[in-house]
Image (cartoon, one colour):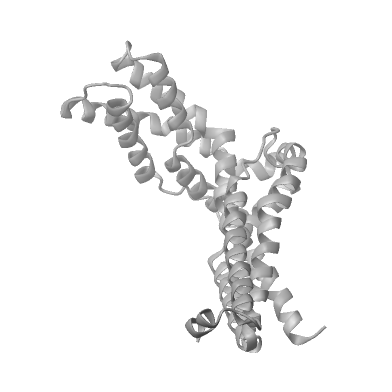
Length: 284
């Protein structure tokens, strides 16, 4: 294998790994949120909402509940706890609960905004302050659920412990920075080795297309095939893993690879013998 081909293969692998690293934390956080706190948060906050707005439209109430169950701040809270549990398992240090009060406060404010915009509720400044206070009182019940996460490795044994250690390694700042640096470095080296006749475009396009197919198509199919037994071993319950983050990352790479491939084809056509002279002049 030539050095250029070896560099192309290494760049393709590192680009794929980079795409995976950007998906791991949100996918895992989304899974834990759905398994443990999404519905629990919505039900507890609904107690407050319906105590103040018992006549609110049912469809609006359902829409607000679904928004609460999938709120991005819940993913932030879950990711913070997941990181803390992984650090605890990986380092053997004593458990220390992360501070997620800011995320819960933003969640509460967004719920009040949704009540006004989607529920048609009239909320005065005094009532808003009261709602925020009552939502904060529900925070303890929600966090008590997240506080059960450190017991996962003990309850489910080696599969859960191995998954947390792998998660900690893959999402660590040093590892992520090293992968991104190596990807950029290999990409620059590949460019200088194959810049003659713009051959680097071919390598970059092939890498984008190949990695895009893996992330957008092959990996989601694999995950969907193993999701139920895998989540049952690690979380103690069978669940489907949301693979939209992988599909999004893969789609971006497919588009980038497709655009580079199209650019290369157009450039070769313009430079081919018999090309339109005006086009050749413009190319020069």
